[in-house]
Length: 476
Image (cartoon, rainbow, N blue to C red):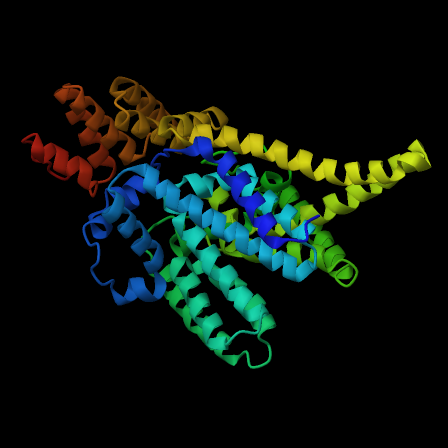
């Protein structure tokens, strides 16, 4: 398709900038508030050294990136979003060079990069500021793989791999790939990986979050759901649609899980068998599964989260690019045969280009639509509620978004729906109390604060609010 790599990079840059143009100025969402903007441990310690625990098993580079963003650009989402988009462009460009090296084809590399960059699944990672860790991890991890593949000095690969881990621990999933590329004298990469795996394990075991890792309420169920969750991710990749900031996962079903395991086994066996004939299909499938493993086997509050599939989708993009190339070629040859000899060459070329271009254009239009929704915190949660009307968390977060957006009365109404869906969620009660306090309905606010503390006496927001109202709460 192209013999000039600079031309391919220009196409990638122009396509991504055009598709993401409507994503500006951007907006803050969900964890952007609780984990960063309203978290004094992060935002009030810009430039201060991190603790050893955060340095070894945390996300120091991601945290530093957000702190610098805040220091240089303030709380304007435009600058946070701009950095995310620049990182996305850098990751996409690196992916192009890696695939070009692996496949020996600039055409397949360009198509892979465009599918990766413009797929609506990626809109969450680019638009969601807290997903910065995935972008930084992907950048340093692809740089590490590039260095290892090029046979550069091993110390450079080690440094880049450690930077990827310090961006997000999920980078450890790529350890087998780096070891394979450096299998001659690969002991240092194994030592580095083992040290970081041990640190990660300690961090997960000691995590305070009750929905995270081994503190998860139902870790056995989470692992049981892993095969089904893999297919949920595959559906989002290969059958675009139904994208959302929140994906509800139904109760596990033994039959569906058993069928999923059987199908996964068939896919793995088939891909292994064709690895010598179609190494690119094997590489794409292996990368997809490998990079999804942390999300599939380490319990967390969101079994299916679109941003976590960001780098894994590079494998799906490569897989799809190869299939589109061969299917377009086959269709072109068939049409050319039917059309007759004079038109054979022209039809073959047109068909080979038409199918990939149609896919890229369709995905781009879907991503532009996703950007318009991600540009508004209320819209993104309204969409989640419309998809999951009987689930508590989307209703709760929509209520919070409405209050932040100044629609306080409507926020109270939506939070009442959240309480109806989950009557034992103390946060919904304390947030409702805050709503009514803003409306000047103090007595109603006190009722909600009190109910929140009846459910959870450790609800600090409700305790502090009652104290500010001059009411001392006595534990029952």
